[in-house]
Length: 384
Ligand SMILES: *Cc1c(COP(=O)(O)O)cnc(C)c1O
Image (cartoon, rainbow, N blue to C red; front, side, top):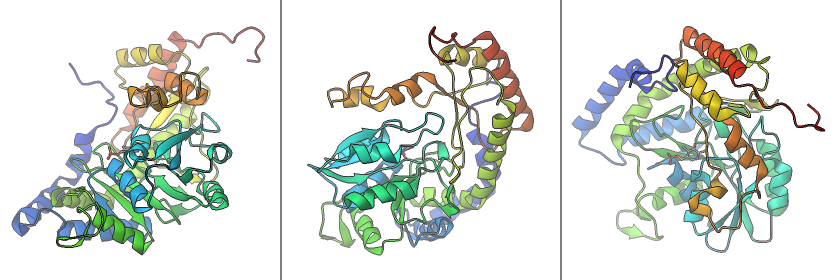
């Protein structure tokens, strides 16, 4: 297969930009003879905590593990309910399920914003609810102050899913610097990605950080002192070295993503039938994804591919309709906003290494493809 003129994401270009720093990091690790919980991990944790404006960063094996262990460190478990967004990557729900608790979905307030609505989160709270997991989806911060209000009113914990939001700002504050623990992923395609799996929890709660350090290492606070039933979820020294090489570039990479997003927002604003993402007044997003909505999404995707533009669907099956949650009490039709988004969203290429010419090619292709795949006419009797 030939490579599309505009690939969805070009990870090789990112690697090329940091190649010499990564090579040097790998050599440091090989020479140190330390491969887990060594000096690179310790240094990266300090550097990423400082970057986020948090007191602590505890690295773990993946973003999903970061969410699960943060919930477990907050003593969430069997018999508890945790409010999650209906529209998110399945890992958010699975992390809750892995603790033994039950994920309870809340729908987004606005399909163009696609982050959970505080009013709907509030309505999902029951006497069993113990926590809320807001997701900063697509790199766009959820309304943290409003979520915090709901949590305080009901006495709930909050764990932010920041897997897509490294460096994003909420009311000027960096995600991770707030009052809650935030879980991030270093999956290779994330805004800050390792060359394998990785994740972290950032928090300014020292006791929570201590519990997480034990949980990720078989529950040990000191060697062979296992006070709690922990697990093995550790970042390795090679990945820590890669992340140290990339972290200094993150702000620049995010700025380059934002420049692409600004062009899409301006140059696609008048395309009929195309729904563009909205930026909330409180948010400085980092554009992990740039999802647009279209009633004939699948046709549009094919037409774009024919024009050399690779797109992705995030996510084609809403979590509640996946096999993993069959029989969990959320049948088809029960979460219409999430179902509508799953049917209509299409993610355009975005990333720090998209050239100006490639952005122009995407804009031209979207204009041509939407003209060829027009939206269905409005149903009679409905306002257009
Ligand atoms: C990627 C992602 C995760 C999981 O991260 P992994 O490192 O792949 O385990 C969780 N939540 C969201 C929203 C994600 O995008």
